[in-house]
Image 1 (cartoon, helix red, strand yellow):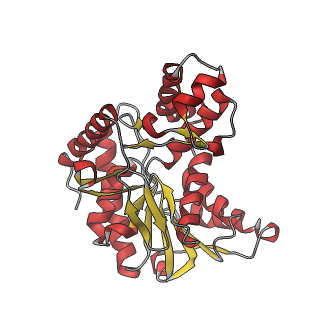
Image 2: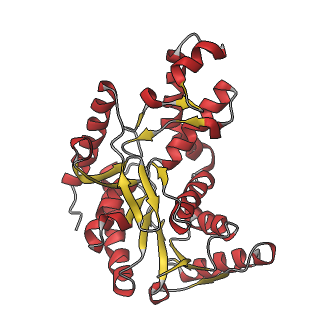
Image 3: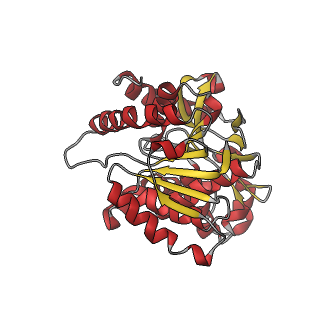
Length: 314
């Protein structure tokens, strides 16, 4: 496999922005865009390719599934948006149908790539992709709560007036309404967050921070209400995952992967910290949670299991 070749399937707002972001990453020498609307893929590829003189050489073009044959990384952003009056389950079924068309075509052309699922609901579609592809669980990854965690760090940094890169904290579980913050291990450059709160003077105690989690959870709704979609930060999150894979960084990222006994959970995908490198997910980390966090994670997993029970993943 050629890890310097990446395919992006789906040229909507997220897919096109992801492709543009990857152009300047220096990670890939070949970038192929696919969309059910071939002209849309061609137009996005042309527009992005015109930026090549400003970056390292990259061959950017619109293609079809046979062009995936030697791609080391295939990113799937394709999916339908929720329509007015449509239930979440209706949307899930619609996107599962789309994935039943996409994933077998990928597999026919390439059985060795790492598949990175970004379309929503990402945890459900990661599980569906795993079942449809028959790939090892290590090579089927969802973007999980990488974006949620970035939002968490950003907002904590804003509140504490600290560089968000110095904040170490995770959002885990479903990428959605049941996600949860892991306060018990949150820290600022190794200083326990509770201890940091005692000296920073921003709030009397950690209770003042809990509104930040609600803001994280509702961020997508607020952005979509204003501009119709979220596309920039998720593209950065995808780039970060791609970096960990292509550069074999063994980075710890809260991607969506198959829970197989982790925290007592089985047969579903959700966001948990994992070591990510050239082979995909190398290890999911069962790091300590307090009792309340463990209960919240079980509730998040139960919500995902309920959705899976209403569809036919494969």
